Image (tube, rainbow, N blue to C red; front, top):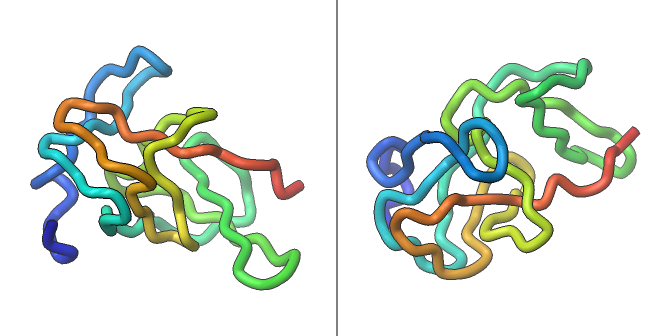
Length: 108
């Protein structure tokens, strides 16, 4: 997979059986593939599409999602994980499968 590909080239948003809208693979995705960066403005207020990232020990920064990655739903058995704001596949993901990540612990 090209790392400079637009998210819409290999991902799509549609209704999810898990919750509301979800993010789905249009193509097969290999384990450890870089999927994209969670884009948005920094915030210190929690919200529906806010991803919290620990920038330094105990210093959490919120990112108010503005791209397709904001539609990722939670799973106890996720297919993806964030490293900072960058998203990677934890395992092979089949075309048509919903991408999920573990929301983790509340930093507050």
